[in-house]
Length: 311
Image 1 (cartoon, helix red, strand yellow):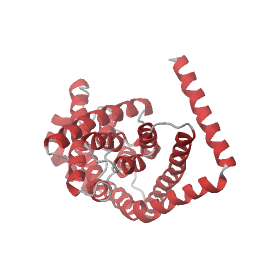
Image 2 (cartoon, helix red, strand yellow; image 1 turned 90 degrees about the horizontal axis):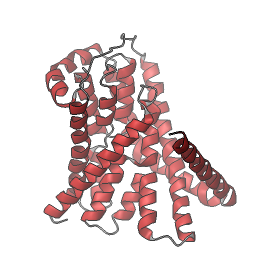
Image 3 (cartoon, helix red, strand yellow; image 1 turned 90 degrees about the vertical axis):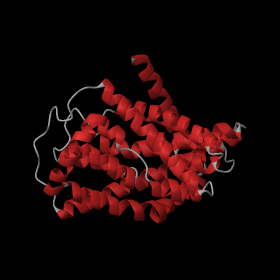
């Protein structure tokens, strides 16, 4: 364990050093990439994300929300082993997309509405993307097919929720094993400022990893790496660019890889999610492992769906 940590630390240090050298050697090239990432965030991500961050944070602070969620308890506890509040996290995430689900997990944990026994399962189930991104941006925008987007969305949810059911069967704690005392709700100004800061955190991650993706492409070209390896590396780093490259040659395999990138999230999305989940008490290594497993299951489902429906 100690040796693996040392290896991981050495690899991270090497990657950071290479990134710094490239930034210093080609400042114009990668500063432009950062600007492109900021423009992508400002024009596509911010308008859709900020309202959801604000509205969901406001919703979870209401006493009526806590009472309403009790109606879902019998079903959510039996299937997924999470309370009704956890089920609402799942619904918000499936509609809004990441990182809104992760932020909602933090909000409900802070408010004392998620118990210790359900936080991890809720986090694993509530870190999904939404239909607007998959159908609009990936399906219609990249693969030129809204049907491909719905196929990816279905496979994505199957991968996420099937692993959630497996966790329910393996872990038998009650969803409310160690409920925390409810804290006073945030004021409206605190909710607004927290939402804006969360949106800025998302924008910073997108801008930085957009530049890192350009670095991977440049390194791949310099080393004459096969295009397939470059695509996979970019998708693991920043899933949007990986999906865009895969869409150039649509096939069941490209859809499967795309679904893995989307469900796993790539390092860029993982950083955004963990920025909210770690303060909620979620351990990063276990969470990342679950996202890898979910991504693999979703990729298999996407491949089978694409093969069955002739994509």
